[in-house]
Amino acid sequence: MDLLQALNWRYATKKMDPTKSVPEAKVQRILEAVRMTATSSGLQPYEIIVVTNKEVRAKIQIAASNQAQITEGSHLLVFAAWNDYTADRINLMFDYNNEVRGFVNEGAEAYRQMLLKNYPAKGPEVNFQHAAKQSYIALGTALIAAAEQEVDATPMEGFKPAEVDEILGLASRGLRSTVLLPLGYREADKDWLVNMKKVRRTNDKFITEVK
Image 1 (cartoon, rainbow, N blue to C red):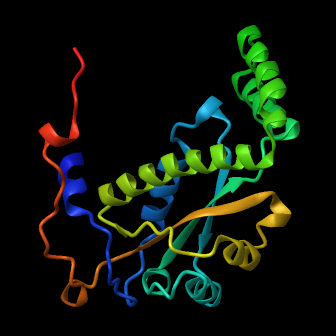
Image 2: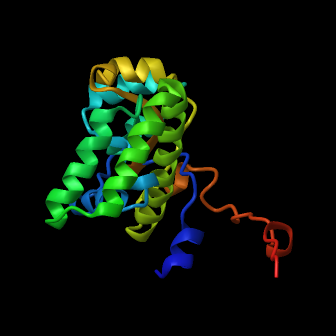
Image 3: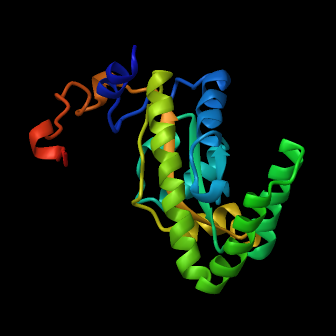
């Protein structure tokens, strides 16, 4: 499928087949797409936790209004944003950039100092909300990448973040969960949504051109 075909094929799968598992190569391709996605200032202020352990997913399911896809799918991606932009985190990413590129760029160093001055001063909650928005950019990339691999994916906000954080021990890592994404394969004969026509607003009601 080309990109638009893949996006038309995908939908928020309601019933996944618990007997089918997404091949590791497909999961890794989806994760690599997420790793390569755009982030503000290139800081990548979130991490992805891949949960395949059935007992752990069962606990998360309880914290997510018992949404079945969490345990029916074979993989659960938990997007977890930084709880703050600290000087250590900013410096770590800029130092890593210098290491990978093999030189120090004056413009980049000036930008580093600007971030060090502005970000930590905003406080943890403001910074977390910014980082959480970055994780949603990653979610969009993951949905597209999953569709390209013909893997079903269902984005979920309906969960208790504090409980998921506790289950996964995220607080000790300076992370807070933002969104869940089960991966699996649709069980078409049991999913009421599978054959429904995709409905999106027409361009004239969705796109405004300013010329």
